[in-house]
Length: 304
Ligand SMILES: Cc1cc2nc3c(=O)[nH]c(=O)nc-3n(C[C@H](O)[C@H](O)[C@H](O)COP(=O)(O)OP(=O)(O)OC[C@H]3O[C@@H](n4cnc5c(N)ncnc54)[C@H](O)[C@@H]3O)c2cc1C
Image (cartoon, rainbow, N blue to C red; front, side, top):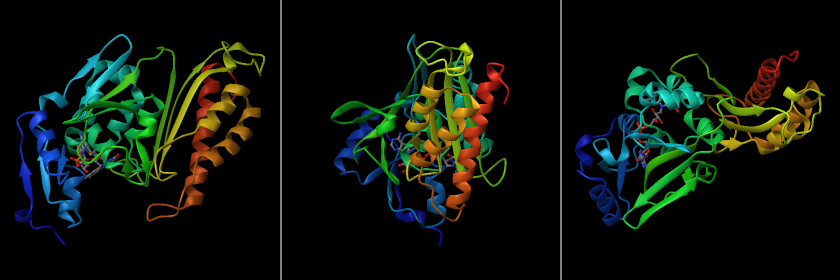
């Protein structure tokens, strides 16, 4: 049943300090509203659990994309369209730009924010695997001050996070990395567009001989660094640390494939739900890992 909007209260603060004060003084009863693309769906379906909102959309403190020598930092209100249009984000973090281009349609991309995607904490969301693979940090702020949280530690369970009731996400920071890293992002859903992910797979890797065992006798076939993150296969987005270790130790040759698959099975815990089955998700995740390995091999001229 649709919600009656007359039951809701929306405050539009002028500054971030005003917003934080209101949230704090209300004991967290006021919740942030950013682009509203998740909140409005719940409102329309009568499932919104809160009735008081503070509108962050007009706050300049939560906008802007800053590029420094060692990181790119962007405001929580950065939209999917902003990510796709920003030349450094699009060039150096193409998985985030791809996640943006595959999130909803253009209207959602113009309005939906990365901060909202993170705070909404859906394990099937599309930007979190990219953020996790890129080693993002999330900045949280309340009237008591600021703190930075490694994004890997942000989600604590299904739809739960380390964010306190009086905190908002203000910025997201991603370290810059070598230009020659390989990015691999795949969203698998029921359709190519306007679909919620069944499985989302994000990986970035640097290949080379340095600090790696030359398993295949080929310099280019070893893995110097790799980060793999998946969505839709556990209560939270997960880093596949064991798969990463396998690839670092064994390289990317065909022999590494089955060990990596076994390691992947230990990193994920897919479930049956309305969108898919655990078996399908498991199989898709394994196939995407195979695709990643093929892509890495192709990159150094090895047979698939
Ligand atoms: C038609 C449609 C298609 C969609 N497709 C996709 C898709 O393909 N992939 C995908 O991942 N998502 C999708 N979504 C979900 C949604 O668009 C994203 O999750 C979006 O990023 C949410 O951002 P928002 O700014 O609109 O959040 P809002 O709706 O404003 O807020 C969402 C939640 O986050 C909290 N919040 C927002 N900003 C902050 C902040 N700065 N600090 C603390 N808490 C905050 C709010 O209190 C609320 O609980 C879709 C939604 C719709 C309606």
